Image (tube, rainbow, N blue to C red; front, side, top):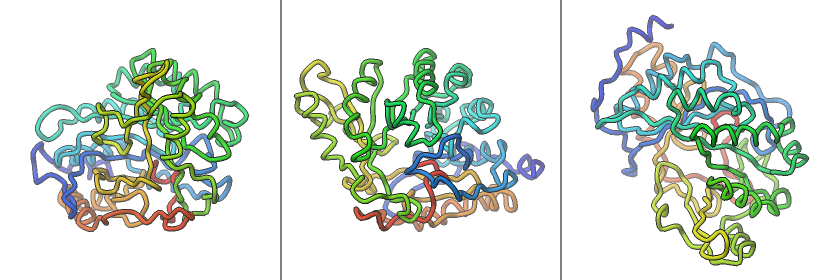
Length: 353
């Protein structure tokens, strides 16, 4: 296999047209799952039992990941986000970050490499990841109450996550904090999570729960709409909430940003990722690659293209053909419904969000 990868000519910078789907949306952002394994079992992400992990032999190798990202960078992708499962359980993570950061992007510069993690191993990895060139970090933390945290993660240690956040700040990787907002579980914590983030110079972001796994993990009544979150924040801080003029235009991610206009936290911002009630399909600029090389045009759909087979058996030409074929079939939007229907059969753990 490695011989095949070494013999595959890398796609040179500015080779071929940029990746543009049939809705004229340009792909600038690739979410790259490194593994389908995780040291947590969060309730909205995976069932407590019954997850079938793919054999390690089916996982993309370090060399294949670099070859694929080099091709995407040549076609206009500017940022790669490393996800999982949990990316920090992947062997060779630091070396992979260093290899990806060395990739030239179309038009000049280097590939931006960022990562989303549960933070469990971040205390030991923050320094080497920063040295390797990781340029951005997001830590997922759904509660700052130790008992609640353990209940939603089924095995997580909040103290390790908090130590990881501190280590990331110390080494210049001030992370965004992602919280899945769940009515009746952590909705009373959202203002406190915002205060924790703002007191450390961080940006909190709140995410609407989505009906992955065919809706099997979706519990009616748990959805906390973005509009409700804004109202809660306005009430908690006694101030108007306005869209942040400095961050209102969507960047490479799906969040919109909102600002507290008044009180002790005046000018502080929080993000909302509202796939259910304020979907952002029209501005989607992302593709997602699973750890086994399946390229997904949409988080909320099961359709995919097999880049692993294309690369291993056909080389650079087959890889490009597979990518552009899937992109030409990308749908206008997702089918998530508020009753928990319309989602894909794939679990969040298999694609990394």
